[in-house]
Length: 475
Image (tube, rainbow, N blue to C red; front, side, top):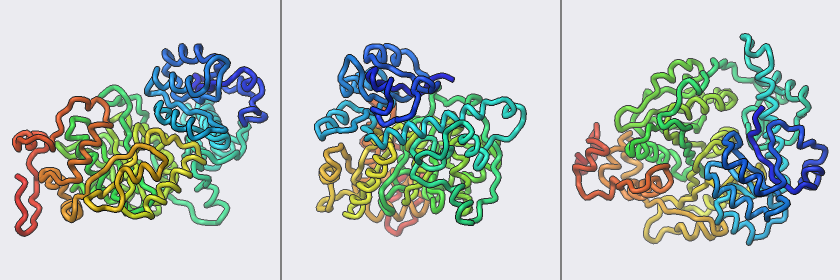
């Protein structure tokens, strides 16, 4: 097994893992973990070995931990770097944020992250055992839990990472809950999703994953996700709009694709993914499950589906639900960037802080989060500065209030009309996306172009008229 995680710690902590909260562990026996006590050696190895996707920096014998973490991130922007800040001060946290370090983990968050990684690799090892490749079905639910116990993993601490396999990024196991409480389990049986390796992404790299999240409902996630997918498609990326609001998602209606393939349909018949493709200016759309009761079954199968989707598209924009659950963990674990919305209600800002506290407890890296104050207008209660101050100085951007026009046109499934009339929300959102999507440097903002002809070539003529009395026709 190739190492996929690096741990940088001083030699004494590697000999005595209890010093970093891992009492009873034998770090040298973990085949998935690469150990370094020298910062120079760690940098030299990680610069060339791309099999390691994540690095935990507790210390080393020759460099300060914060300096090593910053250097690793500077050497490899794609490496997820977590600083173990057991007694972190505000100054240390500020330095870590400024250096672009993905997460600063408390002792408990580190233990949870370690436990989750160990579970995930134990399951991967079980899947490679003889017999599974000879036609036997992969283990799920009770069988997988039993296999983990046989491999010495036990139930452990619920932790973030490999959420669907470990059954609890946020401290809950849907399978166990159904068994213990007597609640009926979903009867849905999904077919195996094909391996991603057979269908590389257009760019040759896994898709850029952009979940749109918020701490509470009503912040505008569905609208922002739908428009973000349209802009990504308009910027030339092969884009998928994934509706992971698994219970009440309607993103497919907002982009005017009422007959879009649903997630549960794709899992039941994976061959249908072959027909999942953008339609001109409209991105590919994978809608929320048609039946609410299938949501938990979808979550259990979601990791393989996400692997497949990341191999088919350049950008995956994911809408999410209001209540944080396992699907949020799955997306945030894979995200390249996450757009975190806060609307103009004080309760939305409080909910944002609660969600961030949850992320801290679960070891979720918040480095990729971009906070956005939504529905900003002259005299609005909250600005990006207010959001930044409330969240202890993290950067925040503003999305302008688009007015009633947004609800009217998006509700009618006419987002291209909204884009064509240069709505304030669209203008501000496009500026944000050009800054965060890969390879957008130097591209011209279509909404900032004075030429109507250029805008039409970029976004095309709307296929529908808004139908509003007295409204100007965008074409």
